[in-house]
Length: 493
Image (tube, rainbow, N blue to C red; front, side, top):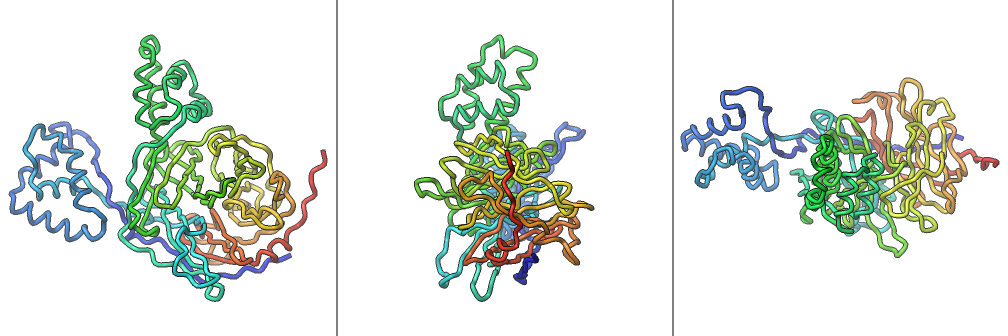
């Protein structure tokens, strides 16, 4: 049965003017002094005061309006390199501005592409008409060097006008990053999951309090017995342990900023090359308390790993490490509530099948079963989810992606049992959406992909990326989508 989709008539494209300013340290190379940073400081020191004053005014006038707290940022960057001058008097303001600017560069977070959206109910529903719904939409923003960040937009669904994106204000605002929180049990599980639980790490775990902050790892490291500390391979162990401790962090924004201004930039060593494909969900605890949760793929240029974001309000975010045999690949998506006291997630642990995993704490995940294998030609290479399951009276609606010949990505769907999500009740045998016509072209051709749809007033609204480059939206009646599914008979023992 063919399912009729309605195009919302909106498109969100990358905007190269959405920039943040960040610390820039030029490569060292060979110089007379052995330090390019030192040479740059010497050159700035030799510039006459009147020229420095004019340069400082020009920098502030040209770049100040593009960044929040620009003067303070330049001062921080100047302080980062000022130690090279030794014990010197307080720097005059103009010289400080120019020095800071010499070690600052703009980064356009979505200069290359904007794709793979994940939509969820916005925490602020004020000012809306009846039956309207405001959405928070997480976006994969791809910038210079193919580095991905998590950006945001807002949208409103109206029963008559349909889907509309609200304005994306400037300037862009980066988070203030601080150390994260651990439990000793979680840290031990993470070490074990990475195959790093040995005598050295075991001694450190024993020295940790039951709950600790990332910086407290140094106190525990100091407790390593001297005979272990002096082993030739201990340094590598300690580097890994420190990096793991700091992979948990907090990222917070000023509440006065709008969601569309905020961007989560890579902050930990295991995500230096990107934070990819965040799948957000409004998670409800058994006591009725809600919070936003998301999984994303951390990429350091060599390895990938799923990570967890938890936020009460999309202002303050806590980033956690995931562990366990099910937390090893891309494409993890959380169910929006526990089922029978257990948390569930969709996974693609083996790289090609859509599977389901469970957890008691939301941090350590174990595989349960394969839900769907790539049976149809349009998904013959691999299959996985397109975001968190959507709860309906008939079951858990799961949007899927399938990869077929010529690495063409299409979107399908299946339905899981409401009480036992390891049971598949039905699925589409043909794609719901596939790249056709102009939607074949993009940064990565022949791809349509989503990280999360929403249901509102009996309609499924599906934002999706085209060619890993830009975003459009379609909608489909929930009843029609469910009716088009082919029933799946339970497997016989």
